[in-house]
Length: 130
Image (tube, rainbow, N blue to C red; front, side):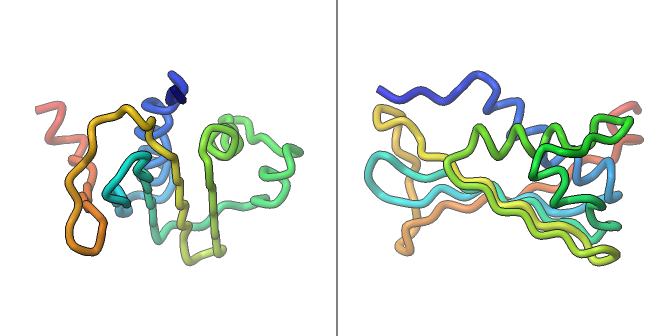
């Protein structure tokens, strides 16, 4: 049986949080594809922030900012079965994370197209502290 690494749940929260912290907002979509095991979990994070400077250096493992920016990107790339990132200066970033779910995991019911979607937007931090 193939297990999802313990860091995966943290990663599925951290990538969206980074988009909101660094870009000031965005959109997160969770989708499960397939009707039989193993299903594929897709997490798509998009924002319209400033983009990620030095992206190629980050992907090559040659760059880390003083804030640690870039560690999440390389960690996500290692943990996921598929990883795509596109970032345009001044136009934002899109990250697509894909992970095969364990064969023994309960099946997520999907639509006729074979997908189950859930979109999420972060709660306003002021609302959380109230």
